[in-house]
Length: 244
View 1 (cartoon, rainbow, N blue to C red):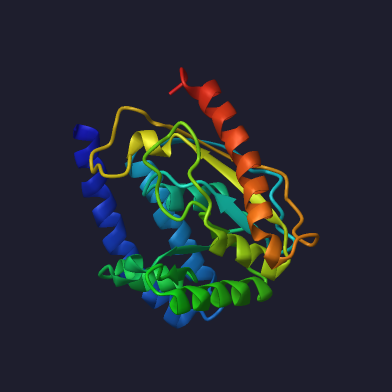
View 2: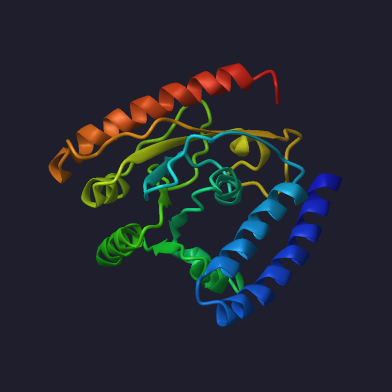
């Protein structure tokens, strides 16, 4: 409980600070570098305030060209932890629209270049895919959560949504699977208190070419991607089960 109280208190102060300085940074630096610096600072602060030990294997991620990172999703910590783990590429996120409606945080979310997704509106959801494609064409990588939402079951990955897969196939850029293991144990969906576990592992797998697949083959590609990611996730979970 002490850890949870410390996290919310210290992270709230950090969030207020970032929400004040990020718009100022955006106003004085049109390159976006300062905004991204403060965005990364906020993500690092989330890890620090929650006392999470982040163990990464992401040194080989592509940085010379934009890619789509596809990560599994278990916790509210996934976005800040993945940002820290993938900071060499510093991708934009596709995340639910409700994040943009949060006071102060929503504006910073947009300034960082993230893309909101309205799952309740098909037309708006397709517009989000177009925005993400434009981000990629402008040279910045994007990270998606193919499961669509945080998963409550941690023994295996959930079903993949084809909308995110369509983005990868339409963009024609490689997709890099990213495995996150442990975040769902620290802050599971439906809870607000942190558990005793502190270690989170994030691993980036080899890029998968999308050029040989068409949009019509999205289900085939989705099944293949899930099989690769689920196998790696289950192996990681089994390996780290007694190391948490």
